[in-house]
Length: 141
Image (cartoon, rainbow, N blue to C red; front, side, top):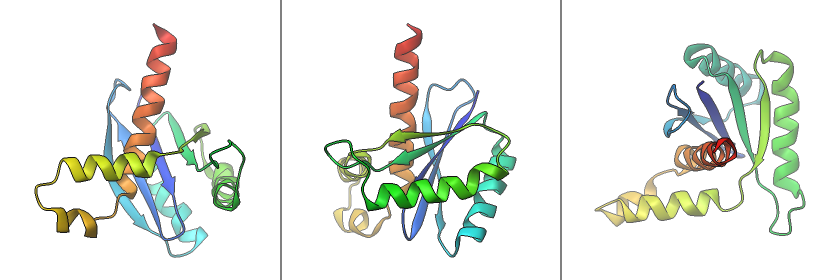
């Protein structure tokens, strides 16, 4: 089953998708945020196009595990999105996903100036999704 992941930020939403076996995550795209209605329509378009069986949304918890202001914003977006989805939505801890994505991009780029200008949102979504897939695989073994 394919799984799609979102890294919801104030300006952009990173999107990632798994392979059909649910083992590997890859970056899909970045949605530039305009307003909640348009953003939700774009997410729904992608869900329709890629037909995942589940949607994962990264929840940016504070280091102590509590929900801060950004996590509350993500929860509010999810609450708007859920009524339109025909698939389950699951919020997952995304602490350190952006830092991991930036480090991966830095290590795998030959030109450091290019990395500084790239947006890491889709890579962060892929990190969130790969962590989720790896944990799920660990539960099955």
